[in-house]
Length: 396
Ligand SMILES: Cc1ncc(COP(=O)(O)O)c(C=O)c1O
Image 1 (spheres, rainbow, N blue to C red):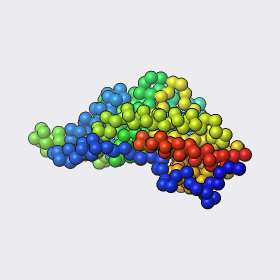
Image 2 (image 1 turned 60 degrees about the horizontal axis):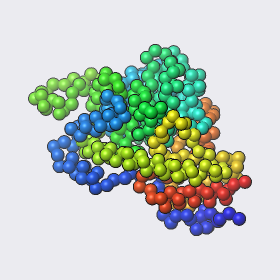
Image 3 (image 1 turned 45 degrees about the vertical axis):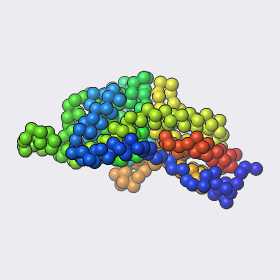
Image 4 (image 1 turned 90 degrees about the vertical axis):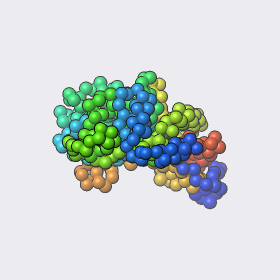
């Protein structure tokens, strides 16, 4: 007889709920922010440029442009790529809505291409089927921290001038064939939301090897204006010109102070995330009813999140029931992601369900387990115990 589940009145594995993600802030982070607050610069100042420089150097790219969120970074990348009405942008459906929304922000059309059933990243074969003369960009998503096969996507060719954009919100620190994520695409987007590898509260950076794209994005984040206030101040000038319709997407010096302090800890964060993921993979690999994301040998995964895939034919329950049972055990599981075009907004735009059957089937099977650097070994074991307990109960 399997153990009585908490959802059926048994004792939960944990008394308090373990969240799926959480920031790790220490005294050095707090001290760095305090120094910034006491300095002359609250918004665009020296720490913004330093954060951009350090982040770009970390991923081996010449230019970094800091903006107020990963979403703003996707918008800036779409703008810099020159996307607009009539242009098609190929995106995977298994992502946060912002990936596809960025195409809509600039008046372009998202075209959904399906993902691989095992790596959960954009499938180049499905992308090839969606290429048309109007394709102006492919946006890959490094799902959970696993780099999409951008080399295969680039090899597809596509119309001249089409840009490859990497939504690497999950993948700071990942590598593919020995090259860092950031150095693989024309434009790569990172997010610094608190659950990500490093945080600035809210924030994002776009990195690019192309200086002209960086110049466009710097203007775009600052209302489309040709210089910023600190430049004008230092040159003793008041004149500026607005040449593009930009936004106020500036990241502040205070946030970049936090980002710089967090970057000092990126290697430690990555090491801990990888150690937790390795423990999960070893413990869950042979559990009947659970499958894991395939990690190709040529990729070094950054483990932003840890997805498991339920083998529903081996379980007498669906994902909703297993999710609820894990929550009752005190495990703050989550689901990444509802296929983007299933959202009511996209349904109103006319995207039909059934468009990407692999992603839709995956969605019914996916559960995200807690993963963040401050998890203790005991927390990790609690998650494993709870997954085994619940899956064993519903196993058939
Ligand atoms: C794949 C992906 N793209 C973009 C974003 C948007 O980033 P932000 O929350 O910083 O706007 C997220 C955030 O969760 C994400 O997971």
